[in-house]
Length: 252
Image (cartoon, rainbow, N blue to C red; front, side, top):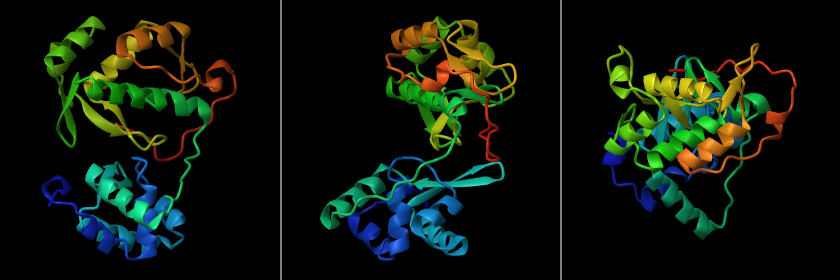
């Protein structure tokens, strides 16, 4: 049964986290990022097999959700109600959530290509803003559509939405970002957005790397069009050699 169809109560979460390792696993996912079972095993300080057993139990209870990206598997909290119940229990127990830090080269962390679309911090921020503004609307767990205002917004970027709908691939969908462990925009719409960003010189692409560099024009235009302030990344002004991405690269 899907988590959104279940009534997640504090008592259900409390029963599930009676085991300390499960408490650590759930609390580490409260930042909204997805983790692999190996990473969660390290956070919970248990073996990989023990972590897998705990995750299976939590999945059966609809407290976590499994995301499959090719041969890679990631886990996140099932929905915000689980996080709210955990928060309530943490207030009572006054426990702090375990922290987890991903290790990703700075140049790839901020912005990079993910096959034919954009990934990294910048891509996740744009994805979140599209949803927040109501331009992008979730139809189910793996697809998006554009609202009327969203179609007008993308038309303003020179993107022909009707042409994208005619392509034999997903129009728009979430693609889990391996550095942020949150989704960025994939599908033909994500690819079109990257091409628009390159054409407008919002970002430039390294010849020998997947890394993308945000330009001054891009920072100004993105703030004006999307209404978001982008963080200043020191890596964007350096000419350091790019590092190779980890094996678990994002894709759609």
